[in-house]
Image (tube, rainbow, N blue to C red):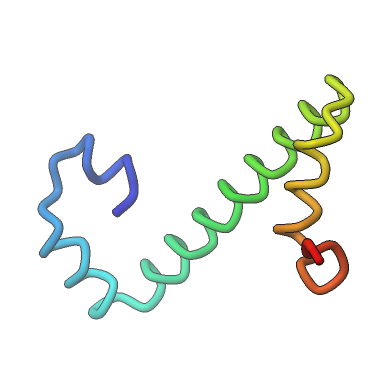
Length: 72
């Protein structure tokens, strides 16, 4: 459940009802969640590169492209 709805004290049942009833709402929620994840990934990558954190860079690569970077 998105933080904004929790802060607005929208009940979980209402949120899930809206997802089922209003396809446009569901698409907007999905898009917003994808954008939030992308922003977090960019921030993590910038932090890893800025700190030259080999471990963090490896972790990010393993999660982003597991078929290439997974641990053997």
